[in-house]
Length: 219
Image (cartoon, rainbow, N blue to C red; front, side):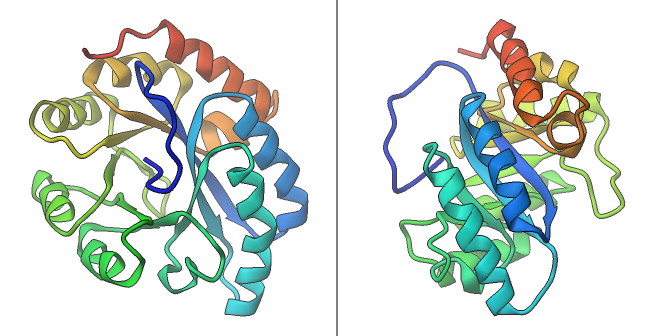
């Protein structure tokens, strides 16, 4: 996923961590670093509580190095105009229509990906606009997400027809094997699986890694 850092190829998907909206960067930084080191994390989608640009940059400059030091790419959730100043690796935009604008704004070496793809057509528009990956199954602003059977159908369709990587958002740890078998290139994990887990983010990611390792990836 990371255009700027080359890594050895591996069999099977890797993780993408989607953070909650962060306001206190200093307190979240050690959690982020520990989670990234607990499993094979390809990227982090960093979401920030809205604020002025100077405050957003201050938070980003605390958190971006924490992810990058583990080898993970750091993608801003939106905030296209701050990607370069924060030395982020790219941006995750909210929908297909934002991809082309993001692609024309950030340098070619940086990643542009998107979620918010309700229809197959939306995913194809994102690909045509220059998306480096598409994400299916992430919760909407109200926390609602696609049911597992529909998500598996969408991932399977994409994996069979397109080369652009597909990120499948797992709302529960037990969804991981089915999404791997459907052909997902990356498994995204957010609040329910990682950040709100009673055992803590690092232990939760370690458990998710066991599920990932036990799944049979599509060849």
